[in-house]
Image (cartoon, rainbow, N blue to C red; front, side):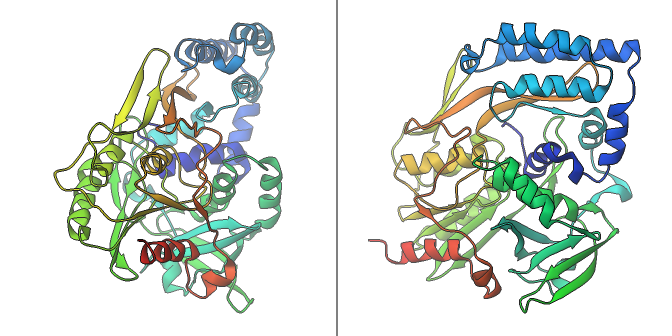
Length: 441
């Protein structure tokens, strides 16, 4: 999706699990209130807006084989009969579920209004510095930001998160896992159900209980601080933090990681400088794990450092009426060595397009776990009743003809974190990429 950063992706997925939101009880109460005649009409108008938008802008004129006019005839009477905002949203969400696609979602006005306002003042969001993944049903710390509250408390990779704010998380994760079993977004929703609880306002204290490396139950009170990275805002989307990391690993291998394909002035400047310094490196690793996507055009610029042939593309974006190829923008100097791309279930959208495109062009080997399979071009608009409506207007097909939406990108080499390796300070996915480059001929 154009302009969709990591925090925004996280928010949309957590909406599926309203119980994990800090003000979920308030939202439920507001949804359950009886409608006034004017509110009922606004909900009807919003229903029509949603249906018409899908009818006119969906990238597939057959709506994936769904009789969209028949859907309107089925759901309009149900919408007319609703008594509360909760019932109205349920009707629209059920209607949208007939499409069986990501990027079609309602964002409650109570939440959309909060998130669409720029961050300012003492109410800015804060974090613990913990990055996690849910592996085999356990919420495991995979990395900790240096100097963060978690780092100062001694939290280490491999520790299992047991409770946040006094509430245990294992039962919630089990319920989510059952609901999303077999779906490409399972890893994302599981991780964000926990990660969302680790966020709040800067200065707040959050009680977190862990199982440490010696299997002892340890609790810490972590004061939330400003997230790392530069603040960036695109259009009416909420601000996101853009960060990158550049270093060498193994036998002088270039390594570049970043969180979103946004802020080209910041990101491309950093990437260009990194590529100049890596030009003679024996290999290159692009770490896109947890990268929420963003602007596909940035990927075209990055690929220009890696693809020699002119006129190559990362795939095609198809709308109702047009097909746009994501043409690689070649550089005068191209890196000739082996390229490894690291992905996981939190790698989405433009990230999947970039990784899949490089692989189809024969310029990268992909390591990690299956990506999230959310590779549509979308937009967000405000409905008459104040809710946000996210919808897709474009689909993406890789250069090799694969559809990533709902399927994700399956790595060439499937590697997963383990608790044992994390406790030893090892990153098995990164190690697999280093070994491949070291043995590359």
